[in-house]
Picture 1 (tube, rainbow, N blue to C red):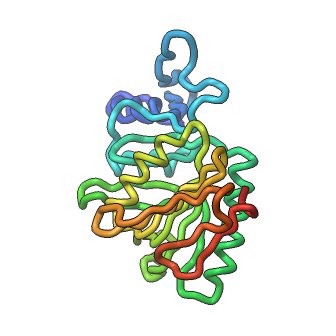
Picture 2 (cartoon, helix red, strand yellow):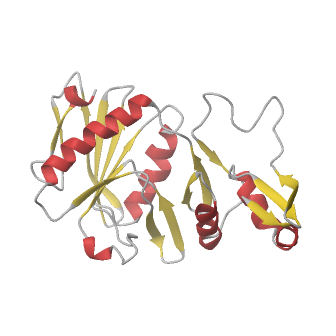
Picture 3 (cartoon, rainbow, N blue to C red):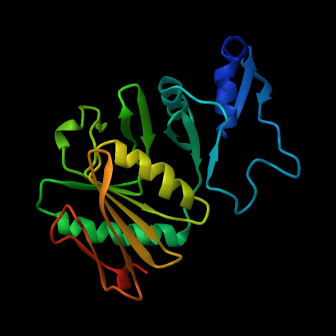
Length: 240
């Protein structure tokens, strides 16, 4: 992201947050690149090493408005949860293979029904409370309130079901941070796909609480079933 020197001086704190989130900030003067704003490296190496976390969180809280500006101007993908920005790295082959398989299964089941199945990257704005917006990109989501898609194709509603495929580096985020966000934001059902243990966890939410959950493990179960969509089933053998 390139910014004029006067803008960088007047809004240094904002651009420092962008740099902490992993965005390269290039300061220009009279059309020429003159400086960069980059975070300091911790002792022993860089902020992101090979094989490190797919999410790189900045230490400072960011406003929703600043996040929208960052997302619009950057070529990178970001999520905002409780004021913390997460930089999304490129997914692995196995991750995308599983997402693709699930997309086919979900698409075929919902075909002809009122709900639509979408995949990342697609921004979803959720609210734990009126003054706490978060923006996430679930791996797969089921949207049944199509009337909340505006004339620009932006979705301003709440998905009925979301799916996240875990990796080693994102496991705690998906199992803790995102579970809490989805639970408190009005989403009805959350599927967590664990390729390492070959299992699918399905959570049912009501009124900001987990009202039911099941773990479907490949060695002990043939299919994973939805709580909210009767008949929606995924064969574990086909996914793993």
